[in-house]
Amino acid sequence: MDFPKFLLGDNTDYPNAVFVVHTEFPRFIINLENDEVEWLEEFDTADEDELANETEALIKEASEFYDREVSRYEEN
Image (cartoon, rainbow, N blue to C red):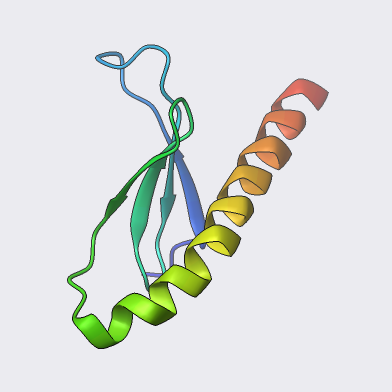
């Protein structure tokens, strides 16, 4: 099954939180309420340098995805 690169998620147990799930490597979930990131991958020391370089760009992409999705809801 193919998944989009990003998915939106919410949960009534976290009424103010909006989650964006990144489905490609490195997989993570970001809570846009507080920018907390939960990585769904195991990393070794060699991966940490690459991860540090990619993290900022991926989080920016996740935020832009959320903004785009919300604007599409508002248009309908």
